[in-house]
Length: 280
Image (cartoon, rainbow, N blue to C red; front, side):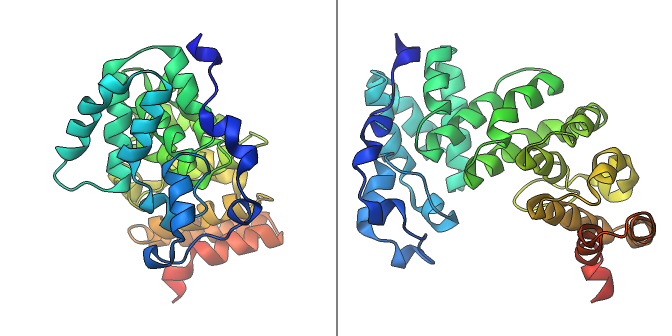
């Protein structure tokens, strides 16, 4: 059965040379080792940094994945979807491929296969598959949660890309759901809860409602004001810095309040990061 099929990449991963597995990501495309790129494009390893993530030939990898799935006849549909984009990027390619999978199949075996692939890129496609699927915002957030918790940075970012527009459309309900996520023991889940509702953010749509009324997000932010994870603290600090661009008085007030209520070094770190634009 397809649900039991393991990607070739998982079967052969133990054969990857140690110098490939232990590498540090290239600092630029021109510095990328051709041997590493070959492994990436075959889906045998995960990307090590953003440079590698951007360098992957997703259509080449997709062709191999479709061969593993015995769905090579689908390739033309994906090629058309990717080629028809006005301004294709690595991120938009993951979205186009994920949406095309959604149009072609609802087979849970195929989506499970992508969701558990050793390469982060097919897992990104799976996240975008759910992003393109019609469901309520509560269902959508529940479905994206495993991708928000993924150990790979790229999959976690795509989880945000795949859901943010829907979060904006149903912000109040989203905040209600995410307010429970901040209690999660997984720092990746807590970080997603903050990062996905950043008023400005990076590479994602702005949330005008939170730019004007950042207090609406306090149920997400407040419980994390002294979070033990730097990953989460950075997200909180960046969130406040975003809000300071439009509501500096509110951000200053919240930061002063947090410093009074919490004397920890973690809160101090968040406040300093949150006020960096105001104090520069």
